[in-house]
Image (cartoon, rainbow, N blue to C red):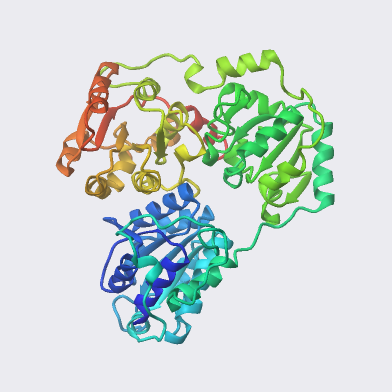
Length: 581
């Protein structure tokens, strides 16, 4: 067995189920090794798209995903997606071929390139170290929630290694991309410790990593007592849950019942408290007027697995004068990083909330009148607005409310970046925290379509909805072919104002020329049909009938909705963002 084959087999044995990439000579054998060991491989049209697809897949499944890229330009093409994943602490292993000879056209300092965007560079240095380095990359990605780039020099990939053997556990009944038998890591079908005597060396090597997964740090009694005192003394507590709390809905809802807290989320955890009468939806720039009022009126704000960054707190303005702030996080460095914190607890969100639940219930912030206000005013579609549709263009609020009424409730929404993004993010409802995928830690335009593809691969049971601006649509347009090739019944909505709208609204009011950020009309519906999509152009509410017809049909082809939207004014969230520039 050569090293390239061993690396693919080890990652499969460690638990990797999906990989995304673009195959070249430097990662050809690596990728085929993943496939031969039962890992589903999704071929993207651009490495940047592949990295973001893997990022979205990992977010929606909680698993480590793999990205496979060619040496040199294959890696540099993926860099923007890797920066987003690294900033978001997404667990990825990136397999990158590497040309170590400085005379090669493909040679760059790959370590420096990935370190610059926050990823962790590692390397397989030789055949004897292949297993150790590969499994360490997987462990760091999984346990430390890092994006790891595992450099694989071409000569090392081709070298023979003694690590090998048959893989009887995987071979039986495993189809390409198929599901593996579900069982707890390190246990047999009945919960007993498995006998690896008949397994291959690959399985035995990976078993040690599977069985060594550490638990979360336990919060100290002193930290728990401090937070308990803050909760017991609060009259108007608000919980803001982030990505680190997406597994802890039940525990947080129960603790909020006891303390009378209202429930909000950061954008990445949207949907976590859906169905609760005390759900304020998203805090921060996307917040409704009511949510902003209630968060600002809190005397205690607790961030649960949430950074409480400038977007979630509107540059700190949602933390009221005199309000106490507490944070619960796995990482002590996250406490107080963005806003001053009065108290920090290091530990798993669910475990901390469970430890604090005992005791009697208090009304806290809750009242029948407030429940009525949340019910009547708690969503953006309940906020009155003047419909500006007309002249061959549709108001993005009217468009998105219409889509929300038409699309099935079981959906997964992914948005790109731009002036438009608040409309799909807030007016398209989602069923739970697994219904919204938001790759915006780097604020890069052009990731939205790839995000939707990765999320769709992770959750094939839901209708994927990609919401893009025209700028992001053109940046990621090659991946329309990937949507068609994979047979995804996706709805791609393009909010087309024929401009980079954020720049128009940022610089236009100051009299600056805008010729560099405005563009002529383009028939995106026709372009999509060329890729194999069904398509409708929407210039007014009546045109949404085309979406309704597609939904009634077999959905054999994905649908692109080319919406010509009004663009005379910035969205509400952009106006808030400008205050911080």
